[in-house]
Image 1 (cartoon, rainbow, N blue to C red):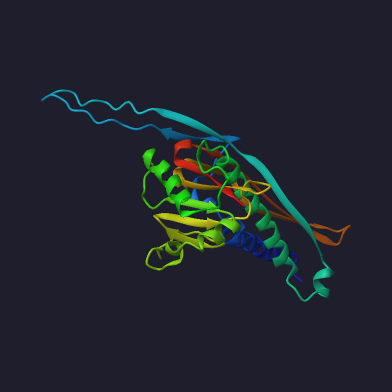
Image 2 (image 1 turned 120 degrees about the vertical axis):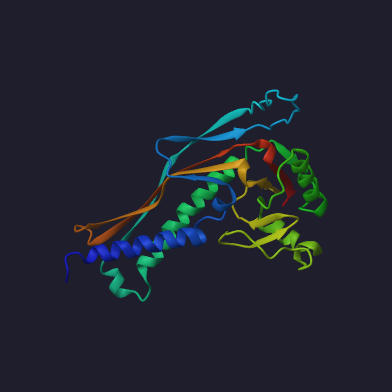
Length: 271
């Protein structure tokens, strides 16, 4: 047997991890403003204010908008997910243990990515509802009205993330399920249920903030939340002779931050 046989094992395992992470590991990363290749412990997202157009006299100087730049810092944190694969166990099972561990590690890191993004969303200051009703059409329109009043662009990059119970309530709204109202063109998002309605891409997620019979959902513009990645999912595999097993270590360095509170609305729903 070639002494480099482990290299083939490692490369295939790494490929499985990345595939699982992209396909089903994270649901929200593609719906927010994302920055990759960050060097250092933190990065900065620029929040730019609104410009004002003015007139000028003939041959006069063009007025300067003096846009307000408010930098928002996003701190990166390191996360790990590891497990053992016993060499002889692989001979005794009829399942691909390597693929199982690869998927489990990728899913764990994907859930952590979404946890970071949801924690950033949870700092939202704009609210709709008071937990007295479920997710109704009127409540949704109230949230959209808030976005419109804040001049949030309706440019196809508005998203909504709701819980399981709220998704079932959406399915009772005729306009949400009817092909006459729901769009067929969706962005590149993976995992879970996805629909487009009212110019918003709707996502189902199990990890939204909840308390007893209360659930927080969010309707937001992609630029209102920032996600930073210093190191994407990376896999390290080492052989431990004393254990006769490989140790699989998956790691990543990521962070998330609320950039613009006016671009996201917390929808308070009764669970």
